[in-house]
Image (tube, rainbow, N blue to C red; front, side, top):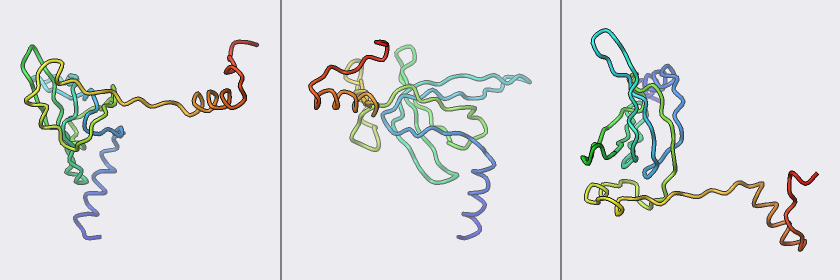
Length: 142
């Protein structure tokens, strides 16, 4: 490893941020620190991630939202001190890495299907009941 990669790794650890594992198509709420005069407040920017750039310390992601009928895109540096927190609201199911085509879409056409994930325990209990020809066991039956 060269000296630049070592410095980048140290700065990423110093940032000490918990960044959720999100991808393009996911809806996130980014808590941004906004300085007004001598006060600092936190403002939420919630929208769909349309692009993600993974470059170590130089990583960034683009979030798009519709505000009062006007589309707004904002690029955030992942390890920026201005970002207070990133909260994952919902996962989207898309087949591309960059969703720039969303810029042309309006209204219902701009919707992204939600990625459904099933929990392993509920799936196993249903499969077991099908195999045994028994109804699934109810947790509150006792």
